[in-house]
Image (cartoon, rainbow, N blue to C red):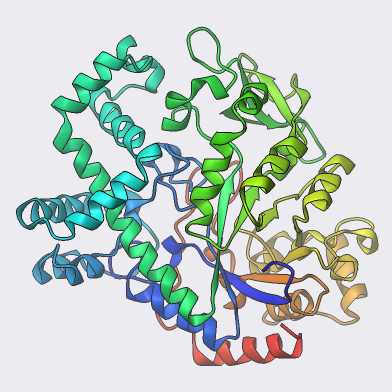
Length: 498
């Protein structure tokens, strides 16, 4: 799939239009698929679809579960169609189109789900399908709902602060809790089922229209997650089940202290002893919902930067070897294909390139990074791309092309751009200039963020790394994805042989 010459658009579910405060899996998602088709695009890339948290700044890369779904994306229209919400309830939720107000959305969607649960209990609509979903997903679902309900019960900093019988998952205590809270647990399973139903319908529509879905998998998980609580043996924890070392990246040109992310580090020796089953289950789960998966911070499959948990910065960490070849060799035996995109941005060493090449994983090329210093040697310059790569104008962590060109571009980058393009680039055309170069590159796959396709400025930026306010909120306004934009992109795509 990733070997064929094609292109697509990056747009997270939250960024779709909808009158319910956040993009969802309802009518506008289907209209977006139709827009992709009209534009000649064959791929739709999204960010992680796992649960987000107000306490974690709503980042889709910080979640309480690597397997569960974000119920904020459940469509009220879809629930009405299924007979789980009355029309008056849906109409009462409608509001103005605006950027995402997560606190308001959490409140309204929680009330919506509670109403749907009440209706389900009365009518048991779709009982067999719900029961089948619970059976087929019990490997992650049972632990997830226990984690959610326990977390709401104790309202403490993390699971390590729960009473010991729950922190340590003692069988008798867990069984008693599950019996005493059966309805609450079933409700949480039901909410996951509602997302699953709506996603499968959208996934089938994409397949029917010839649009493939690309998902996003962060390499690390949060400490305060069901993944660490239910499998502490797979992480480097101390005797109190707290991280002994945490993940990050070392100091570099951009950060003199490095980056201390704080995620627990995998105990790769224990994972290997268990046949990498947890990673296999995670990948199997992802590939059930996506045609291909981008893995964030792929570099850590070769070596990871371990920082003592007591350190406040990433300065005093150390590189540790990771059995990436053994991992992917094991996964290759389990799966007929591994449609993985390796996020290999930043400083990449030869062992990372060797790992990608051995298993045929394309890496990423981002044109916004192309014009630093000796730009003609840059791996991000389209002239230097290779077919086994995925080319982007920018990513969710970049400013938009037009925002970058107006506010962030340096004099050196301007000089290099003038030399490269052979002309002065107008601000109103800069996004099309980069899109043209990315589409016409030799990369097998080209992905354009929707904000760049629409020529939006920095107000449409999705995320600014190392900040916690104002991120993940942008939404496209109704009518922006016009037929004129679709026609122009389609013509460019056809001419580029995609």
